[in-house]
Length: 133
Image (cartoon, rainbow, N blue to C red; front, side, top):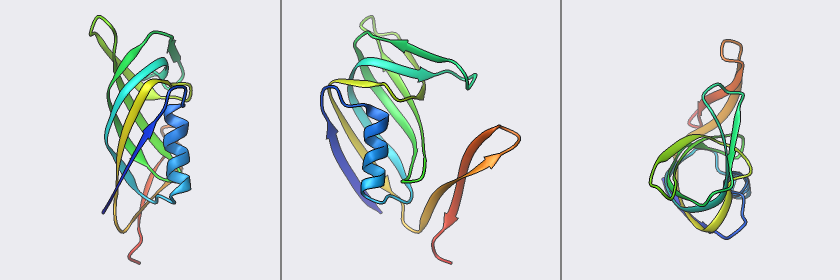
């Protein structure tokens, strides 16, 4: 296993930056260990799988969790408002960093995260492949 640590800067797009990092480093299978920082704009998809919710308020990143590879991302985020209420959802492009984001990814040995279309869900879902064969 290998650890990857990087920092984002004001104005960076959180999702796009993680995706670019995964592609640039050829990550085959990784998970988000930690992500802390702040956003000045958030775009999240709700559980319906259709609706995108946006807010231009400053928020703290409480957590980001999910699977990462050069081929696909599946990330969820929790954010805290100024009044300390927490909300979250599926991380969409357009989440813009306010001050910083510190990201720690753990690359998993011997696996490849790909995607396969699932007719039941209507989404490209996680396909885990062993690199040992």
